[in-house]
Image 1 (cartoon, rainbow, N blue to C red):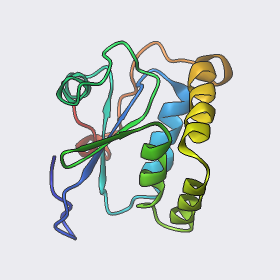
Image 2: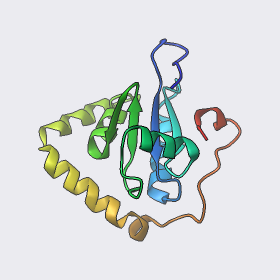
Image 3: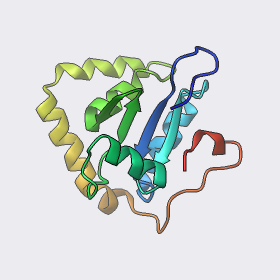
Length: 140
């Protein structure tokens, strides 16, 4: 999926709903706290997004979750969010303490927000277009 230039580690890819305002805000949040560019991004609606969804056998009709791909592993919902937070600068890795909450409860809360994200945060008519400075971090 690409190599992190500074550390030699494989970079991770975050798949997100490209028309969701909350999801786009989350991508901007990660970008601002990932100065080394460890994370790459692809909309679930993109060719890359659809390919990854097929590769990992995820439901093709469910675009309501953020997906994190690290090497040959795939994470979704709260586990993806916690793993992403663990790689961000600042105090964000401390969010990992939320793993003490039973996963079933974390997933129910995640799904509640996912089910209402368009209603609460709005929806775009098309996927976001990254700025020229950020284009290399977005996979098509």
